[in-house]
Length: 557
Image (cartoon, one colour):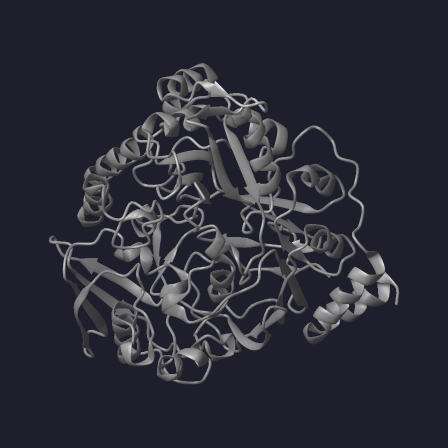
């Protein structure tokens, strides 16, 4: 079979896409990279021109870098799983990707009282789930209660991003749903735009936890319907017939243009890229930065999506040796040259982090002066901390122990290996040993949490800094492994949530960023970027909350 027959097979039927891709790997192997130029490439968008009219039809193949996990909605958290949910479920509110403003969706309007605890949503009429049941007031009420409470009898957790809700009431005459929160929560409306806050039919909520984990049991009102899934291999979504309730700012206001969307996880960078080059796929996520310019020169569209949220940074884990000394942590913070990282490893689609948050996030504060590269400062701090000896490899020692830290290559970031290798070299110049370890996807969450691991990457594209609270408060994930020993940190992570006034909340978030940087709990690296490569015939590719959104997409041929 040659590449032309492979192309015909994969583009004509989504059910054969995985087989075609497997054959592609056998026939083409790991395709050699094109000539790499030193110059960088900017973002190219896939917007259609005024002369082009959307064409209906076609089976779109999207190659993701990671495998999906459980689709149990209230407990879902992985990016690649949320990217699928984003196509299937509508939400009460829509986060406009251009303006970042909240827009109507299933809720046509909403009000919030002065206390910030009572929310009234007017619900759109005439919306139905793909199983034919109505998305009515009772359904919205049940969804909100389910998200807030979970289902203990089934072992289904509550949505940890949801606030505590005192009551949910409906008014048939006004066609509204009223939600009363136990306390003010500045994050609530933002969370209603998230994929995991998507609305599902009663049949999904009624299902067991095991059945809810299967994507075909995720019954939504969105523009796509989950048709089939081969776990870890492919997910097939098809057009929802009769869809007519898109957000008002969406370019498309009817059914999807493409007939189907097949999502295939391909973890090997070269195979994923080779497939798109050979027209075995229409789009992919993640390509090595060194490939960007060459792809753009060949007519492919390279789209860098940089959204608000947490920046990419290394979090310090306090169960590891030596990191309890703030002088050591601050030495690491000042011993990394971020500009060298960007210039040597990345392109114009990437930027050095300026804080623990990215620009555009509420409360963002430029903290970059506090962690500007200064090896002289690092060396002074380590001398003061007593790390004055040196072993034959030039690594600092104290009491017979080498100043060494473990880190695992981040399986969720295809650039992390060269990134960590450059950081390893930079830290070696101040006498610090960074030991880089590797593992697979299934083992990474466990081994990267081992007490011997001092540093672990974090970074989450989310329009609200509540992601920091979920990650680091002792009552949530406690990823610093502080075990509640830092009451001030917990206070700062809690305080901003209840402040509805944007200016006051921004001030509180500035204090939180000060605290994280001043105490060197985090080591900022890069602003988060999701990178997509599109074939030349793709038009109107978009994103919401950093996730791809295929609702508007169409194919030239």
